[in-house]
Image (cartoon, helix red, strand yellow):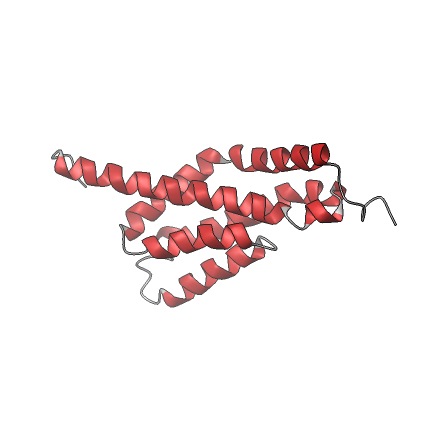
Length: 151
């Protein structure tokens, strides 16, 4: 059995998971910006679809699954009022592709048992951050309205 196919020791799995999570954390500002755009574009109309991204993330075998979901939602946005507004879908796709590129070096050196889980670690964390930041942005937007400073 090759070294790559062997199960990783627990310490190695934990280290690789931490490195994968750090990839997402390093892009936190970008996630916050995407969430703000989603809140401005959608209001709370697409809340269930943003939440669906989070659920998909935790089950992802690859980050491409998230990209497919975004493309499907953008394809349904025939009037350009939600997913396609202001290039949101394209920006989110580029973000997902960037995460995939960032993850590749870890995937290349990870044993198979870890490699199978890394996309879900990264996608789940990124989409949880996106959904949480989106909900927070919606709450801030609502608070600004009730305080008289609404948009």
